[in-house]
Image 1 (cartoon, rainbow, N blue to C red):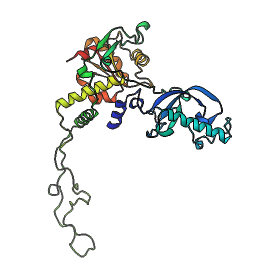
Image 2: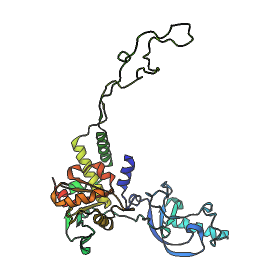
Image 3: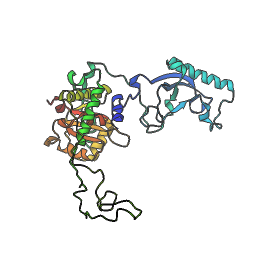
Image 4: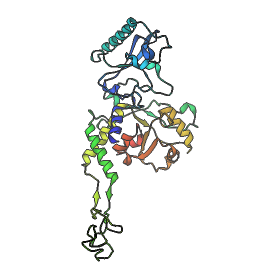
Length: 365
């Protein structure tokens, strides 16, 4: 589970594979070999190409090809397309295959191999992962300050991006390159610590088990196994075979404090690199209604809802009276986790797709 979470967060939600430079969006002019090789010429078609060295199931929702139809050259996937004006001429099929191969060659994809997907074929409610380019340092450290409001507030202020910007500390949010090995070590440490200790369990030995020590039957002549008493482990009422011996089971591990701090710095830097880190002015709301806050977060940040994302929101102190309305309103939104700065852990940041920090949380020591 941890490796899956780490892979999801490290690659980023908006550039799961594009950030690695392995998949590309292109605009080109191709025949509509897309879907069923229909003999309709489509110009300016947006195509997403998957190189052959990537083994990605396009049916997976985490795949950038989810909901897309392949521009295939293998006719076995399109046997049911006989009623859709298919090219019957073998020469035309060869032309389509050659054109697709040329397209892949232009993209420098291993000699024309790979799979192309037609983005215009996406279904409703399916988000296509667009190409993403990370903002270089030090420009990346300058972020706008957003505002969190309830849906019942003035519509002009909802999700409005203020003109204020904030310069983040390069020593915390500007780590480069990202040390995924440190992040992994800290995650393992935190999960082991949460597992904790199993306090000693102990079962009675054969000497302590109640029962007669009388010999149950004669040693010989019965045709059955010998039995000296009735407390044997394979008998009803006997002792437990190989039971716990009263030894404390400790699952916690040790990790130096400097390594834990470095892992958190690299995790925060990774979120900023992905574009999944937001800074808000504060978490002050006028009312404590969950409905208004839920609509506002979904419309402005894409948090919650049926197709929204999860978010970890961090403030300097979640028990302050000024943010009591937000603290109450967010409790029924399962995609939102609201913690203080001391509760912001590497594993918590990694589990959630977005990280929302208040100005007080950023400035807190």
